[in-house]
Length: 528
Image (cartoon, rainbow, N blue to C red; front, side, top):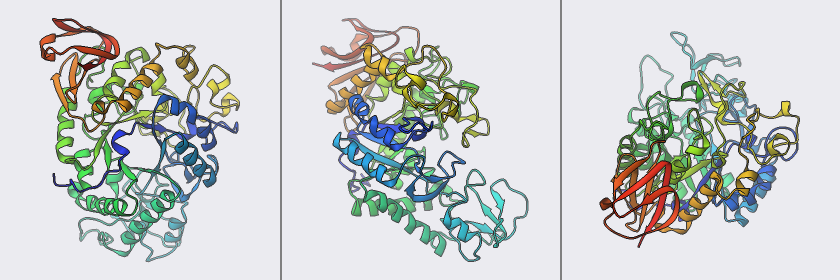
């Protein structure tokens, strides 16, 4: 094992993560926008659910041209969310419930209102950002500078997001402004990343999810120089903060984990590992859909082969140095309940996610079956080209009171509109119904946390790759998953003849001759 000596925090392999989009989770002061005190008020629910690690999307000072991914001050909580003291209180109150808190780090760019950029735009020779005196032809990512320095700056996404300078992996005579990775500006930015992380680590933050982690070094074939950068960060963290972790938004675990990250996600924008599970190809019904079948498609047109190939490639490459994270959704990608897939169909998806040897990440509201909402207005940069990301960012649905318990503000002042459906799911209704999706997810989380064979370290063996998908964990537990509406069967002899004790079963029946899985069913058993 080439990276066997790399340290992994003891808590990370057993983590069940929960992503909170803070502006949409819980509003404590009635202004229509969620905040940190609102999250504190909901910690008892999260403890009841069983998640033990929270990841908050960016909550730093920002003009919110891109929903907080345009950071104006990495060391100050945005006033809409509260104060730095509120962040420390959240960490302390979460710790009392054995829950860790991770923040979102945006290392590749800042807001154009960040003091670093304001200074650089006025000061020739300040190379914290990527500058060119002239460009040969208009290019979308090059933005004319309005400051005294003149010239053009490179933006990563929106013009308000100037790219921080971490250097270029290759020189180009036609672009003499390219700087190497060890130039003064790139060195200053690497040092600043450590200062930012140290500041929040010292206040109890358990780690960071790193936004667009692959984007730092430009023109970097194979991401070699970017990988070296994060490898150095990993060495520093393992030495100075050995119980902290970095999760990357890279989307390519076979590359990012060997580079130095403790974990990386299967994501929608690289390969089909994630989309082959629950994309559904719903087009306008959800962002990033690619129009191809997925395994958890009601019509059963998908296959697990694509995911399994990506999984094996990542497993071999990571070589014990980190873990692959598998999200139900996120703020950029469609919810599980999307398009043709209703909340009555997603129980097997959760059963798979919470029993597979990856790090499960539950996106807020997915556990009750909140649905992706098409056709919503653009909000703070949510409409990225044709991708309507706002449909996955709507307010959390807590109960049957005004605004579903999210906020006491007038409905027209909410961050985004609520799901208008009469039958929209809520936490309160789910808790009151022992057969609800919420209780199903809670039971699976509890089962994972109390059963070592269902966590990341235990081996997995696939017994049947089609419908139903059947596998064992740790040679002691059996999992059966049917992600389509049609029933599916497999001969019982593949099980090896062991007796089974049901632990969490929904529509699966095991007889001496076959395993019968009803539509949208799942079963978790102990082999006795």
